[in-house]
Each structure stands twice: as structure tokens, then as C-alpha cells.
Length: 255
Image (cartoon, rainbow, N blue to C red; front, side, top):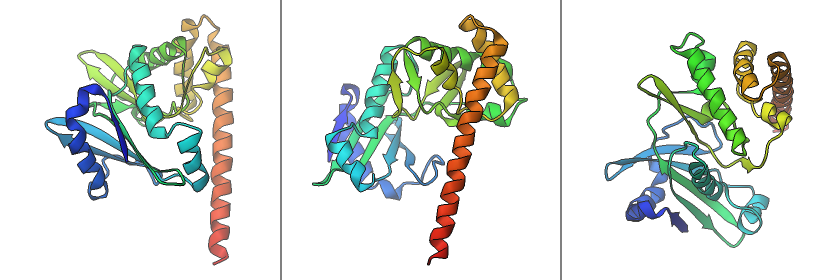
């Protein structure tokens, strides 16, 4: 098992390794479904978030050892790059990889815990949430800043932006960082990057009205393109979900 620590956190090495060895005894701190497990732990007065990635399929075990960086390593490196660009994300602490002769078996990413008030999902579920319009505007400007700095956050979905209120202002932090591209984004790629956020047309309209003047484009045109990519993404998502359900039912029927 290899552990790679940021210099600031080297004194936590033994404690982190002890927690990893007993990881299954800790309760999940966040609902992540069946894919990964995320737990919040306190060490020496500092709160950390440890994300355990699901064991890859055999082919990907080989890939993550010899061809491509693991999700944990990518998360660690991308966090550092974001912070260098002036984009907020919880500070990266460490990543851990466990290999055998086939390839990657388990990996973990550790970051500091950032106390937050809401995620973007709250804006979807609670349209009357205080400062709703102001937060949407701030979030849109935050996304514009990502795009201007050449960051394409491929998992730009409702739960992956933490929103922190400080006095009368809001700060935005990216989490779940293992899927990103760093490149110059064209007009279409920018608008497509909003596709995962929500199915609510009224909220996409709000985002479009905030984003259009930032890129000096017509608001109606920006909304129509955003909505097109939104519908395209969710249609594909629903079809894949339906197919998985059919295959799962057939599997049980064969038993």
C-alpha cells in the first residue's frame, strides 16, 4: 500500500493509515449510493473526508496501474491544480493506492473537510431558498471562471459544488474531482458543461440569463443551446437507466 501526502500533513500519516485499516468500521458520512464510500473523521483536532473508491473491474485494475492514473491520484493532483488556478476546493491531504500483481485493488482520496451550508441541489429542491437568485448568479459566475481558466469539470452535477455563506456573500467549492479536462473551451463546450445540473427549465433559464452577458451572447440563444444539451444528456441518461433495469430484470428472471 502506497500513501502520498501533501507536505503540510505528513504528521498525520500514521493516523490516516490506521483509519484506512479500520475503514469499514466507520459509518458513511454521505449518501453516495453503491459506487463509493465517503467518511468524515477527526484526527488531532482536524476534520478530514476520506473517499474510498470502489474496487475496479479486472480490466480497469490493469489500466489504473499501467496506463492511466487512478481516480484517487487524479483527485489529488486536480485539487492542487485548481487551487493554483485560484479555484476553491477542499485542500488535498493524501491519496492511497493498493496494488497486487494484476493491478489496482483499492484507492482512497483524503481532503480536509469544508463546513458548508448547502449544495447546488438545494437550489433545485427549494426554489424559495433565501437568496436563491443571488446564489444562482454567484454559481454561474463561478462556472464562468472555471471556463475562463480552462477547466472543464465533467462531473458538474448538483451535489458536486459546496456552497458556503460568509457574511452576505457566497463561496463555491468543487468536490468529486477525478473527472476533469484542462483545455480552452469553445462556446458549445461551455454551454454543454451545464447539462448535468438540473432538469428544471426555469432554473436553466436563470443560469442562461446570468451566463449570456458574461460571454457577450444573446440570452435566448444561450438558453436554447443550454436546454438542448440538457435534454440530450437526460435523454441518454434515462435510456441507459432503462436498459440497466431491463438487463437486471432479465438476470433475475433467469435464476
